[in-house]
Length: 94
Image 1 (tube, rainbow, N blue to C red):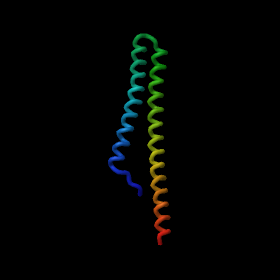
Image 2 (image 1 turned 180 degrees about the vertical axis):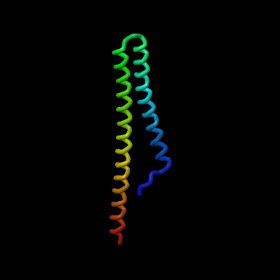
Image 3 (image 1 turned 135 degrees about the horizontal axis):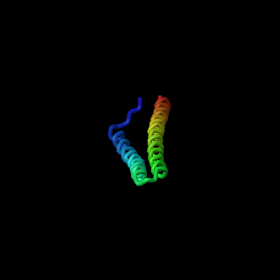
Image 4 (image 1 turned 135 degrees about the vertical axis):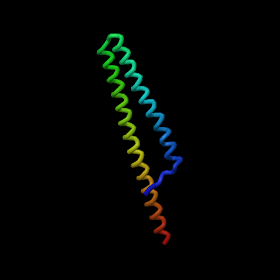
C-alpha cells in the first residue's frame, strides 16, 4: 500500500482548504447579493443571482472532488511505476 507523508498530506489539505474557502465565499457572496436584491424589490434578478451562487458553489465542490480523486490516482500510478522500475532493476542485479 502506498503511503503519503504527514507533511505532504497537510500541505495538500491546506492548498485545498484555500480553494474551498474561496469557492464558498464566492457562492455565498452571490447568494447574499441576491437576497439583498430581492429585499429591494427585484425578485427575478435576485433569484438569478442566488442561482449563480449555488451553481458556482456546486461546480467548485464537484471540481474539488474530481481533483482529489485524480490526484490520488496519479499518486498511486506514480508509486506503482517506481515500484515496477525498482523491481526490474533489482531482478537484473541477480
